[in-house]
Length: 212
Image (tube, rainbow, N blue to C red; front, side, top):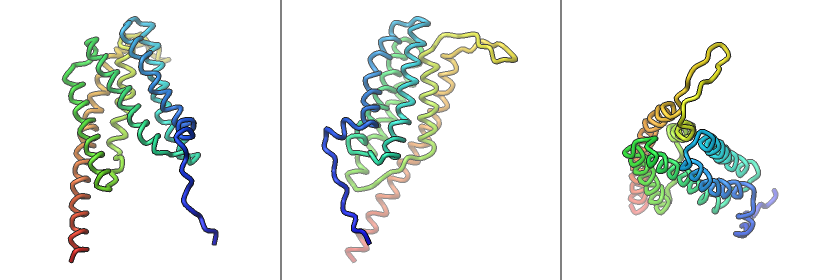
């Protein structure tokens, strides 16, 4: 049987220059132009901002897929990927609130949830526990990203749906999707905390059994 040794650890330079991490860093670099275009607040600049935000959302899926497919998962990627997601989503929400496209309390609630889950994951990591992403969390992210595209476009547009033309109020549509994402956000938060408490309890019981 072939003896397979431990995987060779990549250098920091190799991790920075692999394709998934470069896509992640590209997503971070898209944040300033997205925010600048949003603040200009014209129909054209809002559409351009929505396009750039959409590109960032696609790279969010693409970098993870490539990392798994090519075996390029790295410590740097595990740090940068969630950081990039939170930076672009939260900064976009803050600017949208500043422009009065979304209520400030809604942004505060989302920020509180993200900080709470981030703190929970940090504590879990220190305790040697792994909390898997739940389906509700994935739905939250998808609805949040699509909803933010609507918020960024903001203006109403008359769209031809082949059989009928209708005016789509993108800001209202975005708010509706974000409200729906909030439901999944709260559900996933409850699941994360429940799993964390169960894992801590199981860990303590295991330690007690070993001591006996």
